[in-house]
Length: 170
Image 1: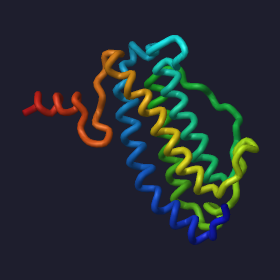
Image 2: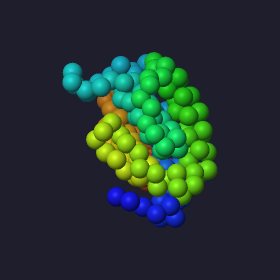
Image 3: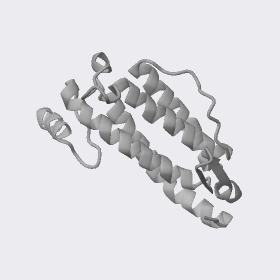
Image 4: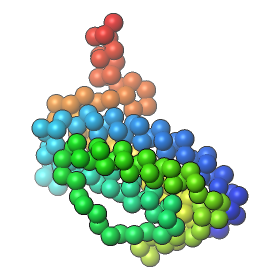
């Protein structure tokens, strides 16, 4: 798919508010993971909550950083091994990646980028791909929360737990 630079820039600029909003929701879900239960997994073939959290965060960093750079770099960075480390990394890298996305030109957003030889798409297309990936795995992680003893935060409207928290305040 070929996009003109002005089309790619329009798409990017129209997606940035959603990217920022979804980041805030993902932070709430990650913050809801009980630190002492991060090794929880619903069944033997599942990721642990910690592993799933790191996958969400590291993959989003890879995608957004790569979109801004115009190429994927799969060099592994230092893996974070605790929920506080994962949250700190997520907040820090998101802020930088988001600032870099905001500075992109139409030409950069329209540039065809290769993903492991499997997909060659305009850079801006990987913003949507990332968003879908995060939503998928964040949904998985949110299902882990109650069995772990955590509370499900408001995601798209209030959750039972956020409603109960509000009721206890008033």
